[in-house]
Length: 286
Length: 156
Image (tube, rainbow over all chains, first blue to last red; front, side, top):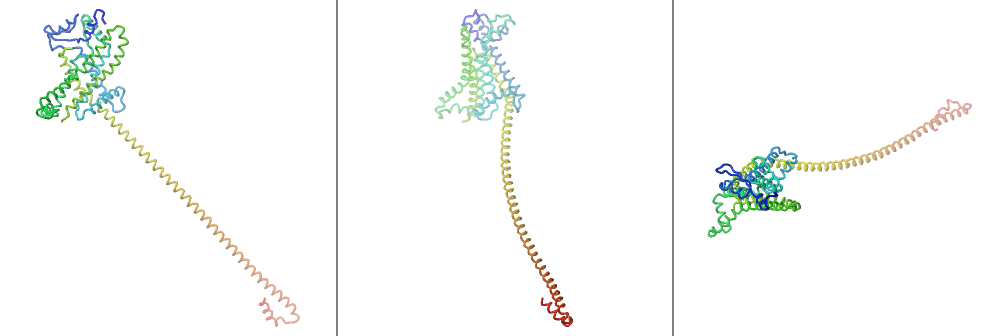
């Protein structure tokens, strides 16, 4: 914890993304002595602001995941597997079993989708266990050495799943798939019928049904996004709060980290399972 | 925490990752796993079959052994019977032979005795004739009394 920061500034500093935007003056990065200044740098860009830390870490972790699994997949032997292959196969088997138990039907997308979500989200959640100051400090030092900016004015939020943009992007991706398969399997008419003739199968109840079903449908991506975001954001926040406690952080950090191991695996698993369940529902013809 | 362009970037990244996973990661891994599962299943089946075969072979061997034992016992039994029979036969034969030899011995003895008797009789007759001759030489003519002597010899 930097000496010249107040506790509030410290917390806010940790919860602010590093952003980047194109302005009339060229490419701008959000760094500045005051938070207010940092957040105003990209204000005029409106929507077209990029959280470069979220993007960077998530893509790096996704590439790590795919590189690792692809490497094993390329040299996969059907005989006695090596340790790495055995581990990867345990993960694949785990996902495959869960998908098969939940999703009845033939679709070659569901299982790889589940695997990608599970491992990728898990890896991103895992960043939560990296000591909260380590990577932001390193980023500050690197930025300082490269461009001479004050390390305290460099932002770096290392857990991509604490960024609502990312969780919402995942959830929207799943939502599009729900819509796509609903229409593909049931047809446009079938899908509309599902939205309007349930749960009360009578023409006079169509408006009520429509409201109920639409809320149900729309609640799915938002609950997915907010559940993951909320859990990880809260977890990260508590890590940061513990880090402000001075010496007291030493006994507190460890139990929270241990507890958090459960949370990060569980949240990745829940996201995967709900995705599979939603897509399974989308495939069901009534 | 604002929703911004990152959303779109992440959506694209997500889609690319899922596509890559579906295309290049999942199929070879699952194929390897399924192939191995099949191999293991085949191996288990083969071992089960071998076990069954072994059991069958053992059963067969036991049966054959039992059969062989029974046959051996039968053969031994037959041999014993045959041996007894042989002994009996031989004993009987021996007995018969003995009887025969004894009988022939008796017969020979009888014949010998008869011959000896005959000879003895002849000798006695000759002796008697000789004696009578010597006694009669003085009194009777040998020629005249020859028929009487012959009659005497026949009567002996």
